[in-house]
Image (tube, rainbow, N blue to C red; front, side, top):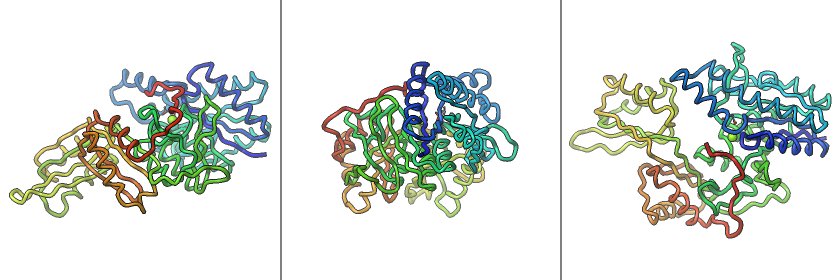
Amino acid sequence: MGLVVQKYGGSSVADAEGIKRVAKRIVDAKKNGNQVVVVVSAMGDTTDELIDLAEQVSPIPAGREFDMLLTAGERISMALLAMAIKNLGHEAQSFTGSQAGVITDSVHNKARIIDVTPGRIRTALDEGNIAIVAGFQGVSHDKKDITTLGRGGSDTTAVALAAALDAEVCEIYTDVDGVFTADPRVVKKARKIDWISFEDMLELAASGSKVLLHRCVEYARRYNIPIHVRSSFSGLRGTWVSNEPQGDQKVEHAIISGVAHDVSEAKVTVVGVPDKPGEAAAIFRTIANAEVNIDMVVQNVSAASTGLTDISFTLPKAEGRKAIDALERNRGVIGFDSLRYDDQIAKISLVGAGMKTNPGVTAGFFEALSDAGVNIELISTSEIRISVVTRADDVNEAVRAVHTAFGLDSDSDEAVVYGGTGR
Ligand code: ASP
Ligand code: MG
């Protein structure tokens, strides 16, 4: 008998009908002879609504109480799902992250899983139950406080449980048919990928593809847990993410796996920085001390006459205020003329291991953007990725142009988006 972990996202359990539909699917997996562990997200836009509510009572909600509030969303869906399964004549028990043994560090709002001790889940399974686990949450190892894993964290819960329970597969059910060569909400001609390597998937996730979270893929790669991303609406076979393709998983020998885009970042430019050793270090130490993660960094050549240069970097919009405040506070120590903050940017990335061995990918990327009349503001590359920053207004057109230029457009079915408000 195999053990499968299934994860259902918020749009799959958006209402009572959705919960009943998902319950049937879970029961089918059990009837096929599997032990089934289900990780569930909060219903629909519940998490966003809870965040709105928190902001109405306190301008900067964060920390312990915020986590306590947000985990309520997953508690609602887990209990309802267990009830719906029982209604179909099968035994189910729901567990909070803490009850399921998801142990995290104590960083509220973005905790990391440090251990999983799923004793109660094992017992529940051995007694013939389907185990339902609240996603996105855990308990801190030291203070035993409730923590959350950051937005979209249920995917990570699912993979972590799959690893701890030695599951055959972690199935991530979502509102699209799998991982596409671009966001199907933007590119109607995006193609479903049959199989993708952990490496390419990691780069896509890091570049803004929202179908799987970066941390979840990282975890899956570390423990070698194959992920099957598929729709809870269609029953079609989705995308396999793993080390090596298995059986009839089709590998397309494309140079490029996909085009990702991200509009969640902002750009900070530190203007008039003295061009001498230690300046970049001082700027980024300041940013690091403020616990802000940065993405791209670009330093321009200094003007010979002034000996001053500009340094730009990108960071999540949500951390923009913190970074600017920290830099302003240290202006005297760092030494710069002014700061510019721009949150109307987008990042567009081309990902694929094939680019290592195929010259001309960078040129083709820039040509496609230029043909679409899109201006490039920053560039960064890794071995298997090229990213550019453009104006936010240009993003959809740029993604489509690049997708077409690299021959990724499908000639048959249009990509279907089954649910979700995209909020
Ligand atoms: N409900 C949480 C969120 O909306 C976690 C998740 O869905 O994975 O971010
Ligand atoms: Mg999600």
